[in-house]
Each structure stands twice: as C-alpha cells, then as structure tokens.
Length: 266
Ligand code: IPD
Ligand code: CA
Ligand code: CA
Image (tube, rainbow, N blue to C red):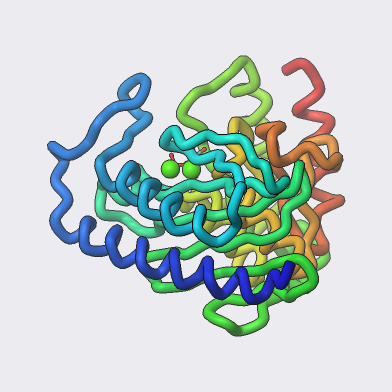
C-alpha cells in the first residue's frame, strides 16, 4: 500500500467535509441540538451528515474496508483495514460556537494504526501521518516537544461525559499534575489534544473513558511525530481500552504519576 498517496486522498476528503462543517457552524442554532443519552452527550444533523459524507468517500478508496464510526456506521472489513472515524470531535464546542473541533480519521489493520488525519476546522490545521512517513501539520513536518521534565510541561486532559467509580482517582491524578506541571488545559477535543502533543504545543495528554474514534487518528500522528502512546499501565491497549497517555520525553514520568493512583482502589 502506498500510504503517502492514501494520506493525500484522505486529506482531500476531510477538507471537503470540513467545508461542510464550517458552513453549518455559521448557521447552527441551539434548537438543532439533539441528545444521545442524558443531558450532556450532544449530537446534531451536522455530526450525522459529516459521517455519511466521509464514509461514502472513504469507502471508494479501499474496497472492502470496514468502518467503526461514532454516529453508527459499523461494518466488518474484508480487506483487513478498518476506518475509525469521529466525524466531529469536539461536538459540544461546535454547538456552543467555541473552538476547537475536528474531523478525526484513523485507519487500522487489527489494532495496528496505519494512517491518521485530524483536521482542526477552526484554525484550518490538518495534522496527518502514516506508516513509514513523518507526522505533518499542513504539510510541514512536526515533532513532539523536546522537553524531558514534568515540571517544564504543559498538559492536556478531558472530562468524560460519564463518570465511573474512577472519578475520585482521576481527580486525584489531576491534583498531582497541577502541583507538578506548568498547568493543565481542557480543549474539548481529544483528537486535537493528541495533535497538539504531536506538534509540541502540549508535552502530554491523558484521559479516560475515550472511544476508539476519539484517539485512532491522533495516536498515530503522535507516534509518527516521535511520541509514545500507551494505556494507563504503560501498555499497548489504548485504542479500545478507554485510557490513554500520550507524550514525548515525559511519558514515563506521566505513567509513574497516573498508574499508582489509578490502580490504588481510590
Ligand atoms: C469528546 C471530546 C472530548 C473528550 C470526550 C469525547 P465528542 O468527543 O473528544 O474532548 O473529553 O471524552 O467524547 O463527543 O466531542 O465527539
Ligand atoms: Ca469524540
Ligand atoms: Ca463526535
């Protein structure tokens, strides 16, 4: 597979769908908001229409590819490759007119990521990478931050819509990081958090209760930018496991904070 050629084709597709989302943002009304589950998990015709457009175009690129997409497109792969899609990551931001929000696309063979594209619509920044090729932002090669120490770092995190019995442990991790870093940001789009780790704006990102479509595209971009992506144990189960830590030189230090608290039974 010529991954770089495929990367370019996917970028064309996200630009087109991104233009649709940008136009929709200009005329979006609060009355367009629908609720998936509960009062805080929002969706709209924009998420659904963007997914339909992406699936329609991407299915032409690799015959027999499967789909795992947030708004319901699930199909098995006969080619071994599966597109993992969040048509609008940062949907709450979008509905409140606040940046950032993005289209996130990953392509996986089993659990191995091959290609990732995260298009942050409000700043018109397209982050992309694929197997054997460097991570780029708008075609410029990017790298994770060279910073090696937690106390010189800016971190990002997210707050899940649903909290399990792990909420106390999570809040404790946030407290420790607040005391040991330059600060913590919560942008509202996990794929953008990952893209910002890839280009060195953030030294690290961690979150729990994530779905594969939140992380597939951005995780590969971090890896190809020289970073490490893991679960909270420091292991490899970040795509379907829900917990993720992504960073450059401070990855070990982050896991050393997260792991003992997360598994302490708090
Ligand atoms: C959400 C965003 C947010 C993260 C949530 C995700 P959505 O995705 O990525 O940053 O904290 O866990 O569910 O709902 O905007 O696609
Ligand atoms: Ca998402
Ligand atoms: Ca979404």
